[in-house]
Structures are given as C-alpha cells and as structure tokens.
Length: 420
Image (cartoon, rainbow, N blue to C red; front, side):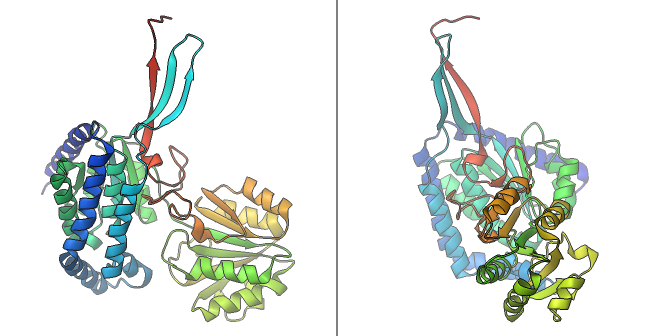
C-alpha cells in the first residue's frame, strides 16, 4: 500500500470514529455499561482463540530475541485475561463522569451558570507490546463517552486483531456503532505519522511506549498530545532514615514488578549516612537477583556493584537492574533528579519532616512520595479505578488518566432574557 493510500485509509477510519462519537453522545449510562459487560463476556468466551493468537505474537517476539520484562508485557495467560475482563466490569461499575457538575452558581446578572463534564470526542491511543491496552483503552474511552482509534505495535499484531473482534462484537450486540473502537491494521511508523495528523477527526493523542515512539508522535502531531513518557523513578535515602523501611521501599519499588513505569530505576543515598544505610539495602536487592550499577563511592561500600556508566543515570532499565549513586545530601538528590528524572514518580525515605516537605515542594514530577513505594503511583492504588496510562506532561492532565481525565468541560448558561 502506498503512503497516500494508507493516509486515506486512516483518515476514513478516523472520520468514521468521529461520526460514531456523535451517535454515542445521547446514549445513557446503561447502554455504555451493557456494552462493557458484553466486552467482558466476549473476552471469556473467546479465551482460547485469544491465547492462541497471543502465542503467535510471543513466538515471533522470542525469535526476534525479545526477553525479560518486554516479553512479560506482551504475554497473556488465563489469569491475566480474566483480570482484564474483571477490569472491564469494574469500569462499568464506576460512576459515569459525563454530565457531572463541576461548579454551579448564579451570576450577578441572574444567569444560572454550570460547568459540566462532557466527552473529549475522539482519542487516538498509540502503544507498544501491551495487548491489554487494546481492551482497557476501549473500555475507558467508551465509559467516558469517547470514540477511540487504537494503533498497537507489530509485537502484538495477532493479539490485537482478535481483541478488536471481541470489542466490535460487544458494541454491535449493545446497539452501538463498532467504529467507536477502531483498531488500525497497519503497524509501520508511517501509520503513526498519518494518524497523528488527523486534526479534523481527532481531539487527543496518547502515546505509550519507548522514548523513540513518544518523540516521533510529539514531533509529527497536529493534534494535542498527552505524553506518557518513560518512568525514571528515584528513591532518595535521607540522613537518619529507618534502614528497615529503606530496604522495604527499595525492594518493593525495584523487584515487585521491574518492567512497569512506576518501578524504581535509581537509588540515591546521602553520603553522610551511606555507610550505615547502603550495605543492608544493597544486600537485600542483590539477594533478590538485582544487578547494581554504582558510582565510585557506592562500589567502595558494595563491592558486588558494577561500575555505572554515564548512560545509566536517567535510564529506564525495565529489568532487575538498578543504578545507585551516593549524593551530597538532599541538595545533591534534588540536583540529580532535576537532571535525570522523567517527571514520573520520585520518593524519599526520611525521618525529617522539614526535608520531606522540601522534597515534595521542589521535585518536579507527577507524583512525589514520602516514605512510600513508587509503585503506589497507579490509578487503582490512588482510587481512580482503571487508568489509560500515567501522563508525565502538564497539559491537560498529569498522573494516572482515569475517566475524569478523558473528559473536558462545557459551560451551561440558563437565563431569562439577559443581555450584555
């Protein structure tokens, strides 16, 4: 297919999504929830077919040399598939954000004013590897009253194709247009370029994936982009911190699930207390199978650590690898995070409330935690229910994007003939 034909095909698909979004606007919550329950039922009914298609993707990935956390992101099994189905049902149980009143008051003119939540319209989701995103993004966008155009990566081609069938069938069974959730069948980079330039049909683009993908989308988009950038998350172990707490936070942040964006990627330790703190924390990480890459002072205290390269600072390993640096107190930690952080999640382990407050105020990130694991920066953990991802940009949203983040607002004025 030529680039011109590909662009035309994607433009038509996005235009159909725009028309479908208008048909969804007047439908009530019951209709949307019925479609979500049909989607969950379809996932269970087609479990065997979905797992067969996912096995094809996994085999192709292994032949390409994919392994570790990246392979884990791609994999589906009966338990994960059931978890995805349950997640869709949980979205159905969440309050409908559409029509919610943000503010209501009477103006000096006597006009009754309201600000209410309304759908964004059409959302484009561009992502790599994770087939669960196909379902979760479709469910969240539907609940928030939006159409969604999905462009998954080549890694999950077969998985996404069968999941698209499940979603389309669920919409049709619920008397909703199947174009509300459209999966682009083209996986090359030109399809991404064509998609993000559909300014007449799309209202928002959300990229999730590697740094190269997000930069490509941002550079070529003619539509607003909410970046779900890499998660280079730091934990700073402060002077006088509780060592047992430091061990627990480091091990949980790094090893509970190394391949996710809120996993810990760099450990910072105050030089004035490193001899007390670092050996015990490092021992626990090493015992858990974690490779440590440290600065010179780190390696003096932890001989098992490899020498850190300059490229290890600010790197998202997504694996059982952790960069470790001894810094000059809170000031050194703040400087390091300002230079190498990705704006995702930063944490401090401390017993000093004034240093905790300074860390919270000065660190520029979507989430800042005191004496808590970076792994808590998650929509479900924060009480939002499911999320479409974690935004690291500042407009129009930052942090976990749940239903509320997939809406915008409308001003409603009710008067009695007032003129200005």
